[in-house]
Image 1 (cartoon, rainbow, N blue to C red):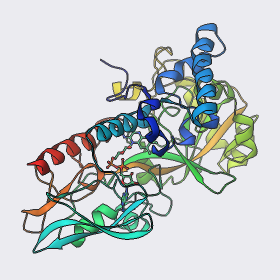
Image 2 (image 1 turned 180 degrees about the vertical axis):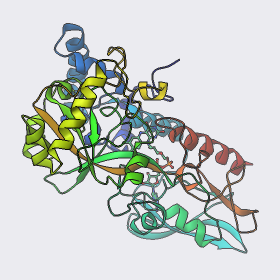
Image 3 (image 1 turned 30 degrees about the vertical axis):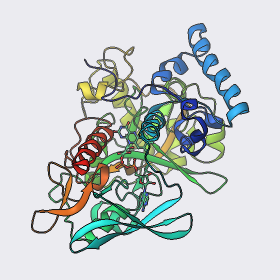
Length: 425
Ligand SMILES: Cc1cc2nc3c(=O)[nH]c(=O)nc-3n(C[C@H](O)[C@H](O)[C@H](O)COP(=O)(O)OP(=O)(O)OC[C@H]3O[C@@H](n4cnc5c(N)ncnc54)[C@H](O)[C@@H]3O)c2cc1C
């Protein structure tokens, strides 16, 4: 099997959560349609084919359901991607009869006689001790939003942009290390790198977009200030090229025809919001490559030479400079209808668009050391009694060398499952 994703949640109907649906986090705006209508990766080929009849019918059904839900429930009930997964897990937790605390911030672990016996948390603004009869499982999602830890573990920390929630501030890891846990070492990388762009909304919130879909497509190139490419834009390891060459930040460029077909960052396939994004300064545009280069402060001659080389190579389907589209992993998010190379095509004629890109992450990977039962290890290598870790709080099983796109949720689910069984004894 050479296509699709490693793990893709099925759609979930949020109405299955009954009155609890309100407390499920809202989907991230930057990965969905305007207004909060959730779209799925599986919808993208339909969007790209709009307004053809089959595609129009598919999207119309989704939009009509969203409009009805929005009126009745205040949000769409067709949950996709991570929100679908969280919705279904939430249902399982409710069915299992677990006690859930909303608005709860765990501050530290309670330790008695070397054993972790609970946590101190601020719940609804009030400091509360929550005692654990069997143990505590840390799963606070790593440290992507912790400035200090980023400086310690991540290259180009000042320019680094994570797509993870702003709440993932390393609290689980800090609590564990304060109780004697040891951080993983010798990882290939301390995060799953992602190429990220950002845009400040009118309300001050900074949207962050991970460039998985657009950069693997034909006609999209990434260049540094000299206008030259410096890596394979479809590679899962492209951020390493940014780090190694110092092209931080840099630019991705695509022509209008390709932007409309495949999207470019926050500009979705179809091109509906392109004008708005140009006005807000997120997208830069130029009728010619020289005009675009002047807009983004890139060497015009370098950019023109780069585009000429890509255009010439595209005729053969072989990226002689960086091998874009050579591997099946590259092709996973290419355009299957583009032959002979699903990821590589001409930059083509103007007008052109550009988005500034930064090295970022879609998960941190360095966390506390655990054993095969997900028990947190102390300095002596033995488990700290009463303490488990799962997800990004535990050191990654990949040790930062992710085998493909999106390899974090799987280990998070597995470590959560193992830790839960181990705690239950
Ligand atoms: C937009 C986006 C797309 C992604 N796509 C993919 C993908 O396709 N495939 C993939 O494998 N991975 C993907 N990821 C990464 C994936 O979501 C994470 O790796 C995964 O959710 C980590 O699971 P976790 O349980 O460790 O942390 P999380 O799912 O982040 O959960 C941690 C929870 O702990 C809470 N928390 C933090 N501190 C405290 C505290 N002190 N007290 C109480 N609660 C606290 C947080 O608010 C959060 O709810 C994506 C991430 C994002 C943002």
